[in-house]
Amino acid sequence: MIIEVKVPQLPESVAEATLLTWKKKVGEAVARDENLIDIETDKVVLEIPAPQAGVLVSIVLEEGATVGSNDLIATIDTEAQVAAAAPAVSQPSAEIVEQQQRLEAVAASAGIPASALGFGSAVMPAAKKLAADAGLDASKVEGTGRGGRVLKEDVQNALAKPAAPAAAAAAPVAAGERAEQRVPMSRLRQRVAERLLQSQQTNAILTTFNEVNMKPLMDLRNKYKDRFEKEHGVKLGFMGFFVKAAVHALKKYPIVNASVDGNDIVYHGYFDIGVAVGSPRGLVVPVIRNADQLSLADIEKTIADFGKRAQEGKLGIEELTGGTYTISNGGTFGSMMSTPIINPPQSAILGMHATKERAVVENGEIVARPMMYLAQSYDHRIIDGREAVLSLVAIKEAIEDPARLLLDL
Image (cartoon, rainbow, N blue to C red; front, side):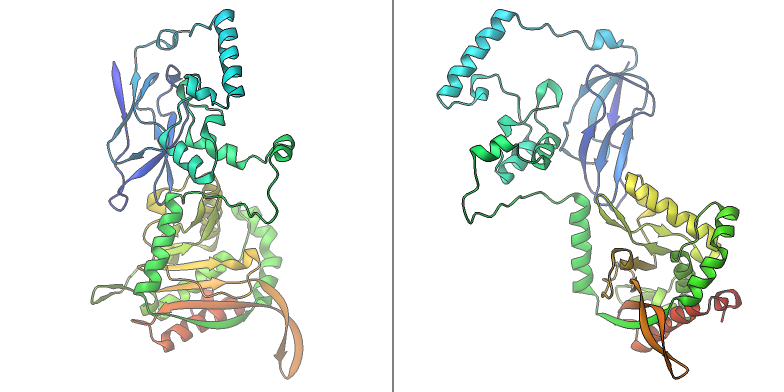
């Protein structure tokens, strides 16, 4: 029985996707729910599992193809045998191989590429375009696709490899020449660029700054981190406290948790906090739903899980949509100060930065304290300076005196 493999129904906000890497070749056995291929949307990379066990008998669309919901991409025969579906390909005789080698040698001496003789592998359109943009001869790239076809991934791998010493010697770079490499944006990067530009063009963005003394929180963490990890099975970090502090401030100043919809202001009665996380594909912002209802341990577990799955490319679209407020921690990369861009349709974002020992005045004396600069960007269309400043002060006070979070002060 022939089973069709189709692209699953994409979310309403996702119009199309790109086929990435086929995990199976035609003629290979597949198990039910085994991943056949990854597809990239502008938000996440999704897996397309086999609907039934059997043999992959056809690949309708190759890697690099643009697809939409319910597009047919492959077929599986649930009754076929692997041996029957993938008959052995007869090897050319020694005489044919020798003849081919002689023709290739003649072609090479005449400056004619072997592909012109019909021996070269087919180059897929996406691979051809990428190679042309990068100034690479695609006919010289070893293909790993079906029938030796050169895929986009093959070109990317070829571009990533450093030039061999012999090749470098044979083709020295002219004095003063500056190398360039043109690489297409991934769908995620295109989407990030689009949303950031949209945010700058549609929001009246201002940023307010403050500084926070991290010593009380660092002392609390050092005192309880071992017991916390033993009790809850997750490390006690700082981000969980900032999520709690943000919720604390948003409850006091609901306008910072609101959003603009046309001429209306939408006040959200829930607190879905986005946490910016780096991934191999770029920045993603998974959302902690109902953060106000979670314990500190639950928040830390959720953040740790997000970080792990972001690296593995296993975050779901539903985890990357929505959100009423975002926290971005540039301090993990050493940032001292920044002005974060609002993640639309949200109206505010908190930027954390590196903690450094700085000289501060306490009780008339200069002392060294571990200080962090905080930045909160906000949409001035609906958030006035008063609410923006006071909400950031509320976050600062909660971090400097964590007991406020317990007493709701």
